[in-house]
Image (cartoon, rainbow, N blue to C red; front, side, top):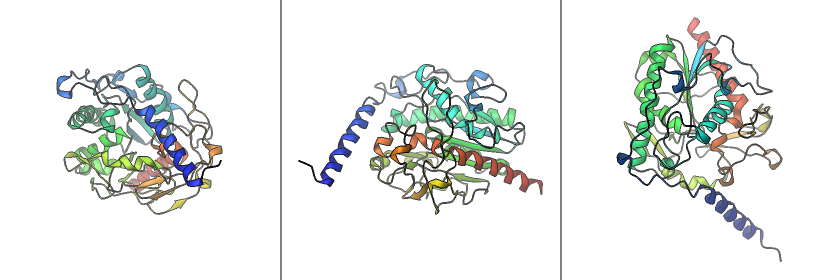
Length: 369
């Protein structure tokens, strides 16, 4: 006997969600309160070991996937300071060692550098600090202990940024880029180090604070980018399908605003379309010249794929739609719930790569006049 369509769909969604929840069930926070723990040793940013990417030192960030154009810049006119997302999925400590090995280090050194940071090697010298990142569970169930873990992680990021400015920047224009946890720290960095400093604002080309739960009503001190070559502005998007169950949990998300961490509740998040670079256009998949599928840890970064998905901003998220025939390499536990958070950059790899180059060129042209 065949079940009614609505009942079949409902049963399918429940089973789908149950499978995803089962895979996330062990992500409970550490049992020991933050103040009763000993934080791991702090990184010394004078040492190369404190940096995941440093100019002239080979890493996965130097990768140029087949089909990527332009290629790696030989004499970049700008820098990128990239704050990496969470790769620490354990719950034995509130913050990971900055030099963590195992899966935490492998995810950073392969996935983040190869699939995210590498898109900036066409425009910029690259600087990616290691830091004592907060555990993923601190974001799933935010508490006062979670805020302390965020603070510790941010203190490292701020020190790394100050070291870069004092010793490496030399007045060069720069891009600020980040993802997920890194974008929480980036929005705080903008408010505390950049927005109110005229010299810094003059050098900032663009801030890609991707995957941040940043309400569109929050003023972080920078205008929202409205075109592909506007500079001195901020960009954010969170990728999701049209119907996403994770939207129900967005009230738990946190952002830095007015000097403290604040739950964003049901406020609509900022969304700039990563294909059109404005907030209103709907862009078809035919305009997406290259998404980067995930091949797996320990495997070479694959070639870009054309036409995987379009994008449009709706209800605070970048809505994507990937046909079943094109989903290989673009699915994980979160996509079962309609969230493409882990693929925020990869789905639009070619577009972000070209856009970073375009904004750098626009910035340089304007400042030569």
